[in-house]
Length: 398
Image 1 (cartoon, one colour):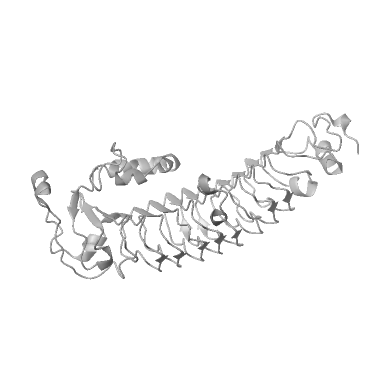
Image 2 (cartoon, rainbow, N blue to C red):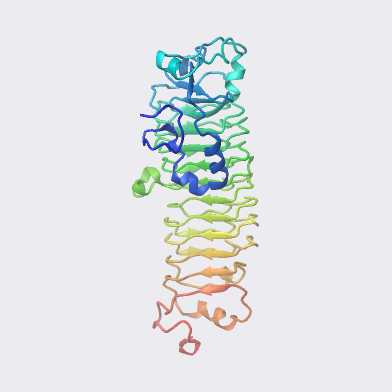
């Protein structure tokens, strides 16, 4: 078994840093690649976790020659975090053994050191497989330089407002496979800045309350997708997204909620500034309500393929002005209604594999093809009334 905080690219599958998995590499390659190189063999000099932090007494702490600290509480029976990370002073000693003394000289940098020196040096915190059930407001206040936080497979059921406030250096936040986490409360994921990845995959999230992401800016990717092995589990389905759930969630590039199982209500995805792509594919959406994407002017791509979309209300996409692609492939859309599609500004609208009816609702489209700016991708044939070829206008009877 490799050392606790050894090189990410170690060949031993038990190495802790394999939690920076392939998905993380693919989704945030540029910044995470730098982080991986930056963390190469850094946490190989064990020190005792401060005894004043009684809740961390079973955790393991280690640092590198640049005094960056990693804390591993993974699979420890801890139920809560320290009441404060900002206690004024505390004396603690380095953990040494004969083997460690043979391999390296005893490190005494932190002996008789201020506790704040310790907490402000922490860049990695692993809380996976612990008994943490709740995160209180300002839970991590004092860990100003924390870069990676992992909370996976725990009984976590509550994230209170502003739990992650003051984590100004956080690059990666993973809250995954916590099946008791049913709701994201207002402000629960607020106040995060420059975090490259927020992964909330495979939890039990059913409801995202209004302003859950208030004042969270410059996020490269927010992933709310389900674990594919649990798609059929009702615990892993999002029950509702309240209006303005993402209000104040600014400067995010990509939003992924694959497997969404709720109609998209008015203003569910409103006021998301700088969003470029939204992936809502492979769900059970059925209906997209009016003003669903109100005032999210920078959206470039929306993917709603394979989501059982049957009904789209007029004005559902009207406010989205910088569309390049609207993917509605493989849904249950029957009518190409003028009041729905005429004002959509997407350059490409993909309606392939939908049961399009070539009835009167289709007539406006045939007469206006020279005026329509978008390129429509349509099925080869109509689903009814007689199933003629969509490209042969003369075959339509009104």
